[in-house]
Length: 93
Image (cartoon, rainbow, N blue to C red; front, top):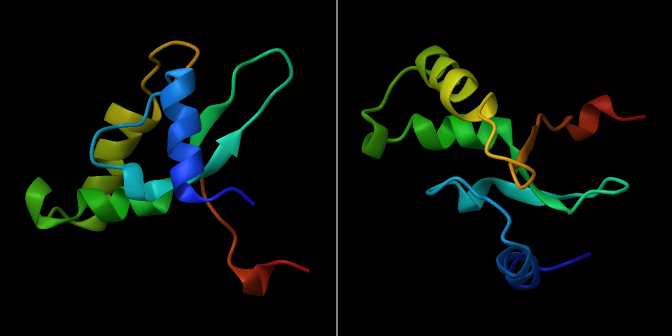
């Protein structure tokens, strides 16, 4: 496992994109053949951040809609981060 400090240093070195204010949502790195690694963020954590007071405390549905339209579907080149939805441990075999 890689710790958060090493991961952030790796992202800085690669020039990986991380949406401002969503650093706490990083859960890992996505590596694919022939491509540079990109940051992997937890979509649910991102929505929780958007539901915070600094964003006007929108409802979960409003935050999810904003995320999907403005962040999750945005393309900023090869270093665009990836987003995931994590399974709960109760759902894994």
